Image (cartoon, rainbow, N blue to C red; front, side):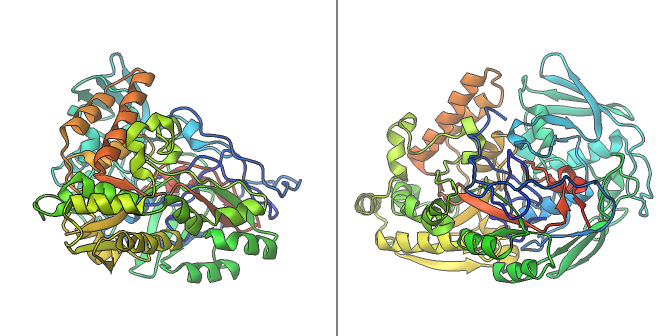
Length: 583
């Protein structure tokens, strides 16, 4: 789970965790560090390097570890809508699933590395083979056992389980089925060998299988022989010990995990604490081992708690405005792109960066926080990201600039200045940084002439099952994590699934999306991804905000060791299984 705040709990570092109270400067990078990542829905050239902080790293003796034992304590902010990994695209569901279930492939998370420099390695798979990028043969590890819980009772995983899970992923109701829509056939060659056939050669098929948004392997008995939402059974490093709704998760180590030697921990204790102030109090009292710290608190807490360890980086998510789909309000003025362009130009991204990330004070303290603006692709995606303030964005970059007067003109031209609109978002699930920006954006919209009323929604009961699924009227503010592969952004926004909450069906974007998914030439694919960002900016189907592009900060208790970095939702397997505690 995350470190107590979704937007402050997802981050990465290309440098080691800083010991003894030093603070690491922020670099241009981001993904989940120890948690389930941030957002609903955590490559190419390396991001810009992290800058040295004013406080030097103290020289301390290396710990003797790794040591086995102990309970790692880290909070999350919300209950999952469901414990079924295919039942919801929520960050809380995917983060839970990554404890219990394994994937065919995973990210090679290593300490002291940037996970966007790391490749994909086998998880349940032993190896894969392809001669043409279109036909893929995947061989499973032998002897992988499910958790020793009835009715599965520790039996060996086979291709039957993989194909059962594949059927769940590709079901018409599956929120992430678009990620594998290029696969025309998945079949078993034998009990330990699978063959996948694609419509066309793909440069990213294995990366898609490694994305913890997409494919978790469940036992075939999940189809009616037991209730996986009550007693989840997988092959992952952790087993669910207990779950009390709105209270806490407890996980215990899987003693038969197929990766020898891990997990080091005996278990994980995950209290559900929606409010940041409560999480901070628990962390200061020593009752949590890691916590995302809002930027306003960094300088003071760093002075008062010299033993804490710190990492400061870019979160890697994207918060964005999205409008209700045409089937909800076909004649609404926000069907006109000028209305959506006006909404983008109505708010001051630089001011929101300052409000959200305390940039000036942190720079004055000798740190180097990011002030980059997200596009529809987050700044963490390095070369895939197209800087909205750059000349390379061309004329569509103007729609990111704050211009309240022009916003009023566009709003009037679209006939929207007299049409009431509901502005909605979930709180407090995404944390203080998100909530501050959400309130400010609502005020900016009203100042620019939008007759907007604000509705703050419960995440589990209202926002995720309704608003995020496109069953709403008006405009909403949502969030994504930093996806492991840039296709995640493209699919999430523009595919024909419930993840495309605005039901965007733009021929130009559809064509660009299809082309990039099969383009092997790196430069040509980059041009296509940039064209997608320009086209979205022109139409503002989804309006990126700067939230997620600024530097955020995680503090760790002195005893935490082995912290690595990953991207996406796979941290419980890729990171937490290798964390250990130095008494």
